[in-house]
Image 1: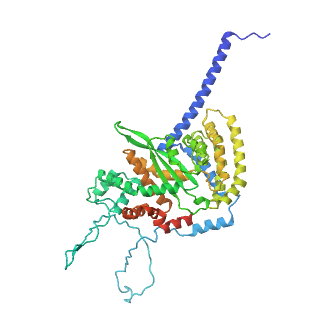
Image 2 (image 1 turned 45 degrees about the vertical axis):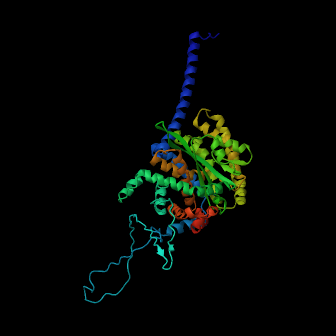
Image 3 (image 1 turned 180 degrees about the vertical axis):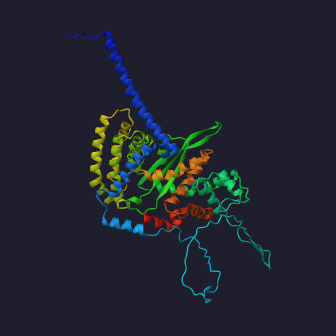
Length: 513
């Protein structure tokens, strides 16, 4: 008959179980912290902060994604694809655009006669090479002279009206204002740096004066920004996202985290020729009532991340939710970068199959896109969901991979919606691309000076972003608008939209897309 366990032995076994549970909990917590550290290091420092091993492994995964997209379900490229690649490789790269002005310098031999026989030279051909040069930007003063003319028979005096100025009684012309605005909000040059650059040309344009010019331009261009807002929200599908913007908090000596919201109308991937546009809005915080206020008049499909502030909009029935597969994929990429999870790698590969289908149907009409998605994407999605549910039951609920899987499963209905509507995209990258310039600028100017500055930034990002979406040089666009808008009829403000001022460039981009 076996002897009963001694009290000391039972106590030891119980302590071992407790210690084992503590070790498991600490292991899970450590995994989660490693995931967070890897994510924040990448956000702050970029991919170079990751270890070479992790990057190498990730490159393999990304290469697999790219291969999947390129192959698009076929074992080898088609002959047409091979011909296209060969033709692309055979074409000579054009370094210099044909639109650049050319200056020709002809170099003749020093000798005018043949040194061997004394005969005269005759043309035999020529060798031509090109070298790119830079002509420094320059300032000029435009003098507006208005002669006064007096009648020889009476006291009547005639004089032309004074030309309009973007800023009343201001010294800045439209081209200078456009250059300053693009420098700050497109090329990410803070005003104090621009002031220093102007000083090298002998111009005393201090930071306060430049900031005052930004404010005047904001007021002058506000009707045009409002027009773009109505255009963007007048569509049937909108991409939405937001990004933090540090702003000085008055009287507190520190910054607060405000938000810039972006709303993008871009239906080109679905074969629609309507011009794309983006509208930005500023808010002091990220409370849900801001996007609800922004979208109160919108009816259609809203493609966004899983931000809870949008949920009320979906409940009303006027707005249909469409989720973003790029956000789902990013969750798995974060886990893979942190610990090399094979489940994360498999999820990335499965999602790549979906993107491969999208690469084939980009630019096709909505009906065709829907038909192909129903036939090819939906079976993959059903398999993916079954696989995710199986993996979710096997992994620890506190692990990073469980969070990534749960994120996908919780949004599954919204993630599937794109397969039922050919107008909708697989992801929300259109909005994220619009916010990229904000992120780049934030690294340079670090924070906004005030809420007013945030509102001005939103207006400029709106105009510059909409011009860029249509393939239009933002500086040329703003210069043209600023030269006209002061005297332009408000009821014809649509004429100053980017695609209406530069229709040729916009049409060219639509054709290329």
